[in-house]
Length: 149
View 1: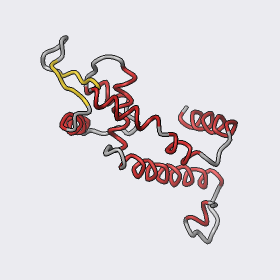
View 2 (view 1 turned 120 degrees about the horizontal axis):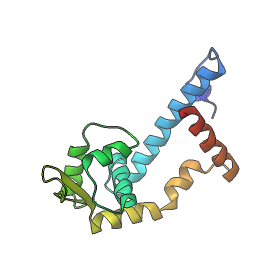
View 3 (view 1 turned 180 degrees about the vertical axis):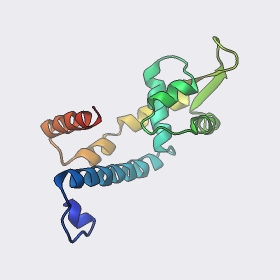
């Protein structure tokens, strides 16, 4: 569906640049909504999923600051999200061996299992990106990188 139809817009955008920016924001919101709906079945939020992926990729205990620096959505409440994840048994918090004032966060066995289950479900990615060919995905990635450059 074209952007104008989705937005029920009757007059054209002032420029293709403006249309592209609105399209990017609108599409991002659509993808986020699909991710939230998908992850709801696994009892995790998109931010928790992102943190599980960060911890899995780190392969070592990390600090809250480490997590915050790598989040897709820079949020200030990382500590509270990690606390909820600790209560869910997804992560483990322990005093830092380097600085006793800090805590290290690691992925728990339950967190690893949950992440593996989510990541092994190709339905999410296939469902969201199903209309794009491999070449189109490569082009999209290149263009998105170029926008951020």
